Image (cartoon, rainbow, N blue to C red; front, top):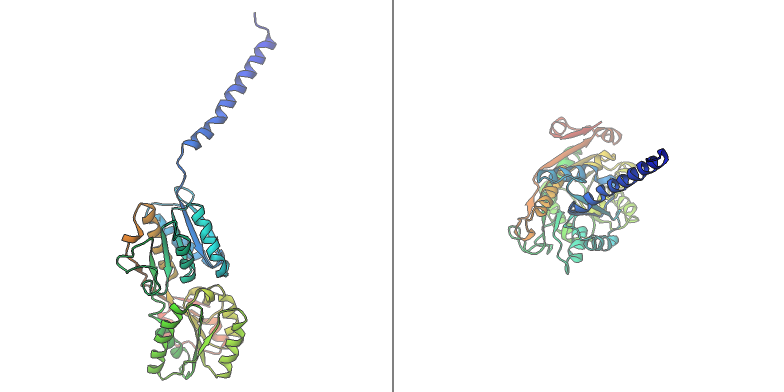
Length: 338
């Protein structure tokens, strides 16, 4: 005859044994689940500047059936405006054995990714404003070859339009300064040439001012004042992209109407922006990244051009600068910040 104490002890032993077995089930199930493919996202900027871009990127991935943290993981690396950190960050992603690197932020970022994948050819999808053939990124637009392909935009091509928009905004302008980054010649040179040709047609003087470090900004705005510049065009450069708030503030402080390429400039208090749609641009980047995850080879994926451009206006800044925005220009704006 079993004693009540013995029966209770056996029951406790059984429950403990079953609990131990049950505890191993999730571990076993996890061990059997295949690891998620990993996308490396490399940028020279900071996350706060990429909120809209990342949302569009994830939507592009979703087109190909990939949802972050469900069936794909994303490792982010941010250079926070310090391009010298990019090679190390790119090397980290290669060592992490990511399936593909999505490179946002223009030439410096993709060049770092290209260098890091020279010996271990991880696929790279880039987003650049430069001609990727002339920049040495791909062999041709239709047949990139190698391990790189990606998305370009119209930011160089629509450069002359920025001069026209500033002239429309400031109809009496005769001198419009152009700020470029001389350390990015693959973008600065064609952009400058395009605007110089347009300036001649419009009868404008176009002094070129250079900035490649933070202390240069004060010198640029001081030189613009000395030249009696009526307005300023800021080249679409990754160095400037990471200092948009600073540039918008300086333009306002110096009462200089300025135009840039992307919406964040206007959101930060800049007067006007005209350039590639960030959302379309990064949506395409995500879609191409998804195609490579599905097995497509970069060498066989033609470089795609993002063709959508957007016009943004900040009416509060216009009022501060004493500018009355022409109604036709207001009517063409994709977004107006008041």
